[in-house]
Length: 557
Image 1 (tube, one colour):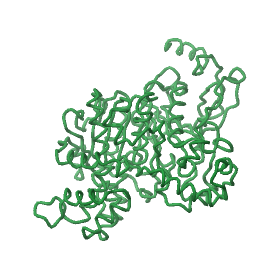
Image 2 (tube, rainbow, N blue to C red; image 1 turned 120 degrees about the vertical axis):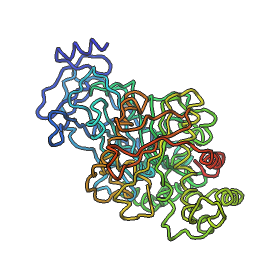
Image 3 (cartoon, helix red, strand yellow; image 1 turned 30 degrees about the horizontal axis):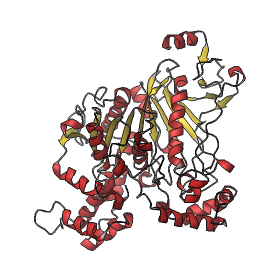
Image 4 (cartoon, helix red, strand yellow; image 1 turned 90 degrees about the vertical axis):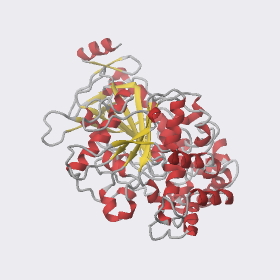
C-alpha cells in the first residue's frame, strides 16, 4: 500500500482515506492538503535563522457537523466525507485557528457554539505515504474553559521533525457536560468527551493526507486534558478498545464527578433561566433557546457545575473503580504531575494555618468526604506540631492532601495497573521546574500546577492560571523545554520516551523499576544539560495514594 501511495504521489495524484484517487489542487499560497470531500490551504512558517526546516500549520478544520439546532446536546455527528465532484473541490483557507468553544464566563463575540474544529502541524516536507506518528493534544481548563490556541504544537513538530501534531476544540461547560435524566432520554451525556473521540477518529481516517499514520496515535493532555486522556483510556470500560495506541496524562485533574441529585439541580437552574419546563419537552425547549439565555445560564452557575458524568456507557463507572478492575484499554502510558500541583488548589499559604483550615480547604473541592474519612485523613497526614511530621506548616499539609487525592496519585494508579496488565511501556514522572513567571508572582506556589505545560508550549499558554506575559526562556530553561518535548515526541514515535531523548537527559526506565524521572533545571548551567534524574517511588507515596484511591466514591474521582 505504501508503494502505491508513493507512485500516486509521483504521478501528481492524492489519495483519499478510502483509497480513491483524487486530483491534486494548485496552491495559491501555502501548502494544500486534499481530502477528497474538502481541501485545505495551510500556513507555512519557519523560525528566523532556521534555514529550510519548516512547519506547516492547518487550522479550523471541521471534524464533525456543527452542533447547532437539533444537534445541540447530542453526540457529534460525522460530516459527509464522501469524495465530492471527483475530488475537484474548493480550497478552504486553513491558515488560522477556528473560533474557540464557548467558555465560562462566556462571550459570544469571540467564541462560538459552532466550534468542532481541529488543527494540524506537520513538517513541511511530510507528504502522503510518509506515515509519521501523530500526537493529539487535549487542552485542560476544568471542562469549562480552554482554547487550543493556547497550546501550539509548533515546537514539538519543529524540534522532532518526525511527528505530526494535532489539537482540537471540544464542547465545554453547559454545552459539553449538561447532566440530567432528561438529557439522557433526549440527547447525550458527556458530549465534550465524545467530541474528543470524534476528533481522534477523524485523525485516524485522514491524517495520512498530511503525512501521518492513523494507526500510530498518541493522545496527550494536562489537568482536565490529562483527565480526558485517562477517561478516553477507561472509556466503555475498555470493551471497545481505543482509536490510539499511547497516552500521556499530566496532572490529571477533574471533578469531583457529580452525583445525579447534584447535576439534576444544576439542570433545573439552567431550565429556569432559559424559561423551559421540567418535563419531556425540556430538551426541545433548550435546543430552541437563544444562545444569549444559555450564556446567562453558563455564567450564573459555578464552574464546578460542569464535569464528566457516569452515564453507564462511555463512562460506566468512576475511573478509580474501573482501573483496579482492569476495565480500561491497554495502551502505552506516561503519567505524572508537578511537584507542587496541590498548592495551586490550597489557597494562599496565609489562609491555611490551623487544622480546621485544612479541613475547610479540602471540603471546598471534595464535598462528599465522610466524617470518618476526615478524621482518618487528619491522622494519616500528621499535624505539623507532632514530632516527625513531614509537614512544616498546615498549608503544606493541606497542599499535599489536595495533590494526593487526585492530581498526584491517579497517574501512579493507572501506570501501576497498566504494568500489571502487561504494558511494558508504562512510565512515571515528576516535573520539578517551576513556571518562572508564576513563581515570581507567588513564590509560595513552588513548582505549581501548569508548570510542565509552560515548558511544553514555549510559555504561550493563555489559561488564567498561566496567563502572564512570557519573556522567553533563558539558556537553562530552554534545555528543560527541549528535554520534555524530546521525551514526549520520542514516546510518540516509539512508545519509549528514552529512544529519541536529548543526549543530556537520563534514561527513563519503566514502571517495573519502581522509579520515575524527575525533570529539573540546572540553574547554574554548569552541567551542560539539566539536573534531571531518576528517583525511587517510595512506599510512603504509594500508601498515601492508596489511602485515597480506595475512597473514590467519596472523592468522586
